[in-house]
Length: 233
Picture 1 (spheres, rainbow, N blue to C red):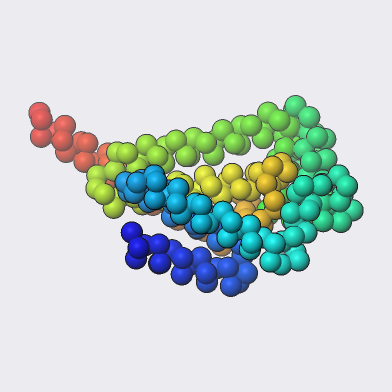
Picture 2: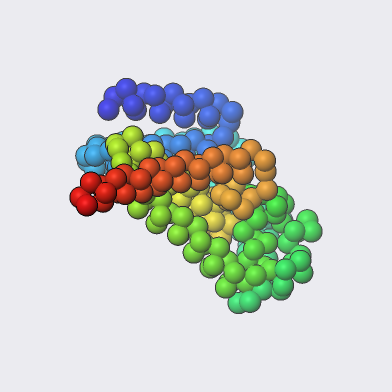
């Protein structure tokens, strides 16, 4: 347990030195999810959380731009011309979409009203042009990825495969939650991408590699099941 915590802590420290608190948070939560899947007692994870939460709060307040993000998160309307501009405009874009959306290509958010609309805030474009219906469908598809990923972890042929599938799935789901939460104004903006949707070569490459790992574990699970069936016959 201690070597793992030290290893993850060292990795988080290197990412924080970039500085990139959002990615560090995702790494820490992914590691916690893997430890839970590995059978680490919940009380130990709760103890780590009690240490991590105040530390994260201190880190959030340690830089001016992070404090500005907190201000924009708490007061998006009052700060709509300042720190809350991105959050406020994302909410306006989602509101413009209504139930069915403005139609593909007819949205306004991507034309500069929402900064980084093609990367971190691609969900705004989805919500505006496809409406609540399309946004819910996208979240539903990502949820299916999560369900299938955890099912793959349960059916993995070995311990390593189970932890690999669980870790990849937790990572993708946590990153989705953090990104969408920031777009909806439920969380401070962190600058992380939305898996499989945000523009960016490195992001899409890593997401595709993660999907490939899950498919490989699922394929091995299927082969193991076929071998057992043949042996029983």
